[in-house]
Image (cartoon, rainbow, N blue to C red; front, side, top):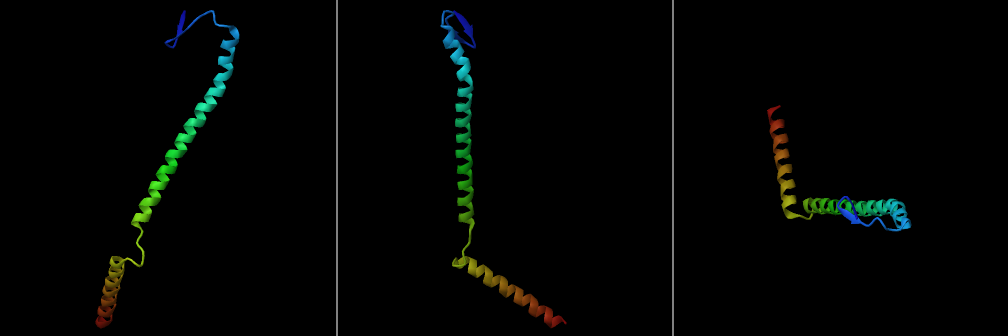
Length: 89
């Protein structure tokens, strides 16, 4: 028996089997690459979905009462600045 990369095989293996291993190696690489790409794609899609859900959570709709109060008080402050600026002129 001979050991290659800690895998033992017998020398008496038919030559056709050894050839098919070499021939199929590229097919195996292609399959492994496809699996790796599909796993990567799934991970990217999950991250995009997480990003989308975070954006939706941070989204403030005009129907949100707290947001309306913030806008109202900003406008009141802006009006006060304008009014105080007119009184100084």
